[in-house]
Length: 338
Image 1 (cartoon, rainbow, N blue to C red):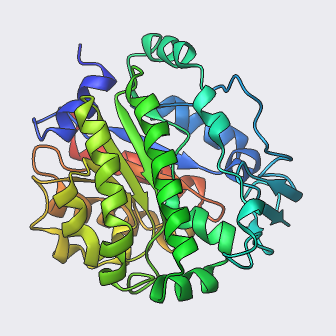
Image 2: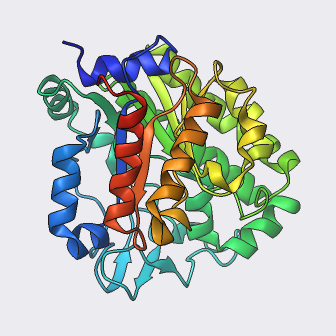
């Protein structure tokens, strides 16, 4: 019998799997608000992917709980203020006000390099699911947490020398961390950065290609050199950089495909895989089920070519359980023998 891991690999390789792999992302708020419905979804539509979380032998500098009301401090020294239990807060007071004077307020978390790799390998050995690195680099977003979004945008337009130096330090650290993961038994490495607004990229494609595409290319090369797949997540309308992501070798991209016209995606299957996420800003909040079924069939029509996308859904704060369930029921109806 085919295993979940094999289904994912055959999908990634466009090798005619019996069905698309199932995957669901969620927030604690969703699990806490709908515990019974959430458990039923996991029972009826089990994920084919297992996220592997690390344990660090050296203590992290994190303080607090990112999903509880109050202040959570991340490993880099950024304070997140949270006013809603079950979701993640925002950085209101970035630590780096001036590149020339505040660099010592930012900590590069080298303690991540004390990761217990034997424990990761044991977790991988104990499952037949596709295993995915679960503690991930996010350079653009982390820079915003450190510097502030508006300030970072201005820095990118006219980059201070100190910023360029720090960006190289961050890139080197993330690459070292990914190389450590690449030596484990996980099937795929993973990174993320939310790049899109509702209508376009947050910065110009030219600046993105100058500052961030080379970093992502390094990430992909680390994964592929070790025989791993490389996954990426990015929210918003990021259609302008899809060809670049295919070019550098991203194997699977989770993104808000309904933020971009699906017709523009039709020439991309066969080169890279797309997450297949159903619209969580409208459909999973408002439904009805008939519209969700139509959306799933549209994703299948445009993106499924003997592989090419996942049966993916994000159970977000506003998502309703019947609409999440409809996503997976609709995918099942397209592959009735499985």
